[in-house]
Amino acid sequence: MSTQTPQTPQTPQPRAAEPQGDQQESSHLGRVVRDLFTAESTPLVTVLAIVLALLVGAILIIVSDPAAMRELGYFFSRPSDFLKSAWHDVAHGYSDLFKGSIFNPATVRGTPSQFFGPITNTLEDATPLIFGGLAVTVAFRGGMFNIGGQGMTIGGAILTTYVAFQWTGIPGALQLVVAVLAGILGGVILGGFVGWLKAKRGAHEVVVTIMLNYILLFFLTNYLLTTTAFHDPTKAGQSISKPAATKAILPHLFGPSLNTDIGLVLALAATVAAGWFFNRSKLGFEIRAVGLNPSAARTNGISVGRAQIWAMVISGGLMGMIGVMQVLGLNNPNNNSLSPNIDAGLGFNAITVALLGRTKPWGVVWAALLYGAFQAGASVMQANDGISTDIISVIEALIVIFVSAPQLIKEIFRLRSRGAAVPGAAS
Image (cartoon, rainbow, N blue to C red; front, side):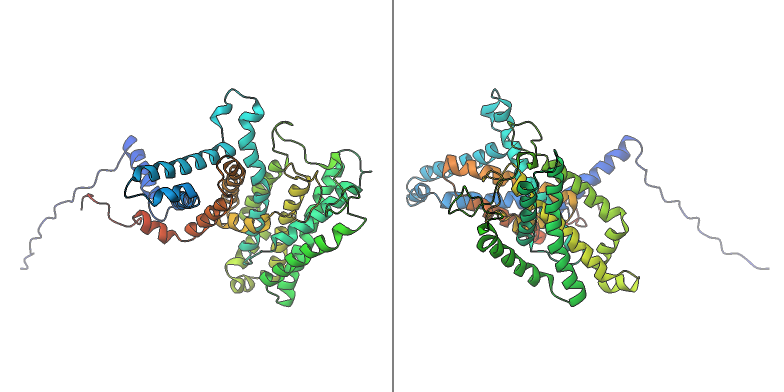
């Protein structure tokens, strides 16, 4: 007769109560907040990078003021004088930067042009940077680095200028449409050429685009603007083209008293199109696949060369839109004419905008708005406080450096990682 060993009954473990209702929503919100304030949070890193760059900029503002430096020599005997001088420089400088780019409280009871003037200036300065940032983003997503923004901008500006002053027989607003398309074509031709050399002849796009920058710049300044076809005969001794016809100029967006044109709508439309292109279209998927791994893309039947060519074609067309904005937009100081400095460094600034926006379409928009605010406010800061606009350029460069080094931001601000234990948490 067999006996069975009695088994010890297991005590059921209590189950943790699941959060319900408001508790569940509260716990979810808590996770969102914790994730936002971890080192891996992209928004937090970007905001802290901007803060850190502004702090460095404040130091540069103080150092660049001779009066503050004189007070620093007597710091140990009367430190309050130096601190007052330093605070005055930084507070007034950044205050005027804000007033010139966002809002000036003194204009609350002023005219609409005074009240909305600063923010519309920011929008106008940001518009070409949106196009440029998107252009760099498209090329980067395809595994290429387009630093030929200067040349492609000039190429687009040349064609759009010619149509704008020469094709006056085109009726009504149709001339403006054709001028815009001509500017896009100018960038497309150069971008397609770079892509073809890359895909079919193995040329490195960085080298080719750098050389095209010089070629287009010297062609513009040393030859084109001296020809009778382009040069304005009323500007003797000046390298300026004939002005665009009135009907070929981009119209105001918010009325004639505010400095924003219809180009902003085109830039936002291009952003929406870029987002759809990368997320929904077959060509956008192929370009992204080639950018991530050309060998794997080729193995899966994707034509690497075709994707590279199309990426540079689209990138060039968007760069050409910078030329359109510079010639036909409201920021042209030469009566909507073509001049040697028509690119205004925007082709290179587009690279930093794309990097700051992390090569994402809407990230590019926010980065362009930040840079546009800096550009709009820098002139006011210089006029009112004598602070060089070069300091703003340094701040812009520092922001990109800090954003590209998130580990540095983590160490400076002592951010915890997402997986780190929370002090005081129950074990």
